[in-house]
Amino acid sequence: MNSPMSPPFGLAEVPGAELVPHLPKVRIGYILCLATFIDEGIVLSQHPEIASGQTFLPPLHLFLLSFVTAVYWLVSIHRLHVVLSLVPGWKHPISPGRAVWFHFIPIYFLYWLYHWPEEAANFVNWRVQRRVVQPRNAGIIVLLAYFSLFLLGPGGLALLFFALSYVVAWVARALLTPLHLPPRNNEASS
Image 1: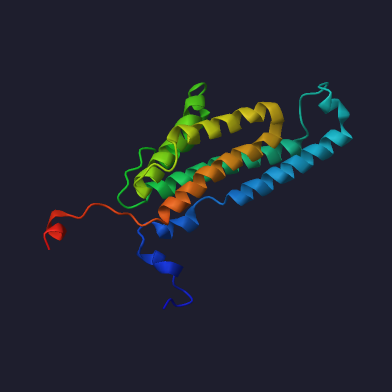
Image 2: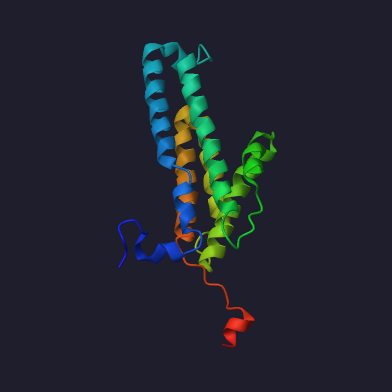
């Protein structure tokens, strides 16, 4: 029987399950997005000239809130890749620092927004030992969410967190899945 402090259903025996609590907290990103959206609505109601395009600069508080939200999105990406790099038996091809900094390379970042979710999906498929996520689709979801920023402004950040939550949810499921590798030669002969 499990004690109150032990993980349920024998998850302590699943290598990598201890990494699930360290995955990014996407709900914090949603809260930041909601605060940005509310602040944007207040600013637009008080300054209609911004909505009509007469002035381009948003007030400092809206800019800072949008900036903090974008930084938290990058921190979440870093945290996701830290977790993936710590999974026993998996050699993650993207370092956490590279996962973040490649977002700042002009033009290349468009490919990068597609590539890192693709590698996370490859991990999920490896861990589960079958194709449950199309790597191409994971990359396309994040890329389309990024393009929504141009249509929705700061409100588009919520779609970026939605795309990130899609990737994080699959990684969490994969980490909770027992890894079934073929037995070693000495175990097969016993």
